[in-house]
Length: 181
Image (cartoon, rainbow, N blue to C red; front, top):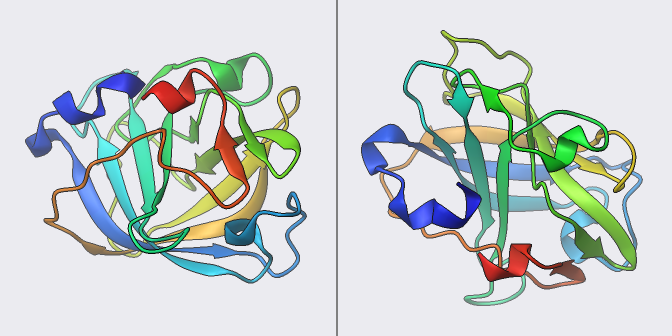
């Protein structure tokens, strides 16, 4: 699922212009400019599939030009559980899952972490929409996710967006197999 981001039907996705804000008091790995406390980043968020039913779901985040012109930061997240080993597994969920995880590890500075997003509401009749505030979270390899910022969905977008697990930089390094997607 995560490696097939370009094969997802566009009619089964929702795309939003968004803003990622790192909390001013967030405890985050050092040496990672996009995670600096108080930082704000323009983002594009795509979710899917939006159809009813209980199946694996995904949420992708792109921070355009996060590491300079044309150097984006992408996070490819899938519906999962919290705590090891569940945050390393894709789990079926309703159209809006309660937690999305990168599943695989990244090095942020010198710390191995997972990235995640937690939604305030989940369920079979819930869909993502303009104005939603999602919790941006990180987790150690063995541990639980914790809040470090807010991902605010601002407006729906019709833009065609391509995501890649290899889009990274600025002290964030995807570890295999993430960097192959």
